[in-house]
Length: 210
Image 1: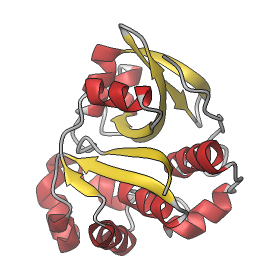
Image 2 (image 1 turned 180 degrees about the vertical axis):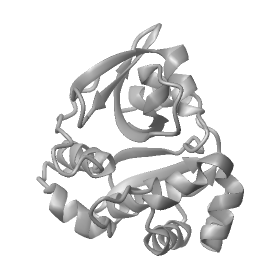
Image 3 (image 1 turned 135 degrees about the vertical axis):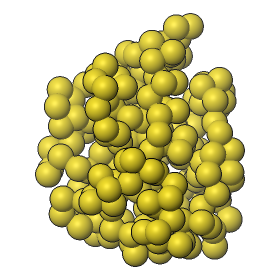
């Protein structure tokens, strides 16, 4: 099964995969065009920094969409700031913190908790497939180095899931390297990338207008 979701490239500073994901979702459900610059402003992303899944989830809710945010980890401990990040991510913490604006992430987490759209739950591939069958669109955080077959530090990458078949998951890979619409990846490999240290199995499922 495949959804016809608009595709955009990560052609800004290369660190805007979640902004691109948000752009795809907003166009698909609301038929509105949001620039990456505008989405940077809405998410509070500073140039050269990553964006957390909580930041884009908060924005998608703010623009009027039905949003559910899932993670295998509680969000409240992240309100503890850098100290918690170091404890939680261990060897990968320095790299993650280098590209993370902790105060901005903290504010987005506070928003999600106030909106009551967070659930502590590890989303399975079968649940992702079920959501697609119901017309919802998932955004999933993966370790892109797992997809590329590289034994390297965590490389977080947000992708919009566009479909599935018996053995594969399809998603928009916005780049910046080799941007590919409806990229086909074997399910086993996708699960490895989704379960990697650093992702927390973060998944946003958007199901239309509120």
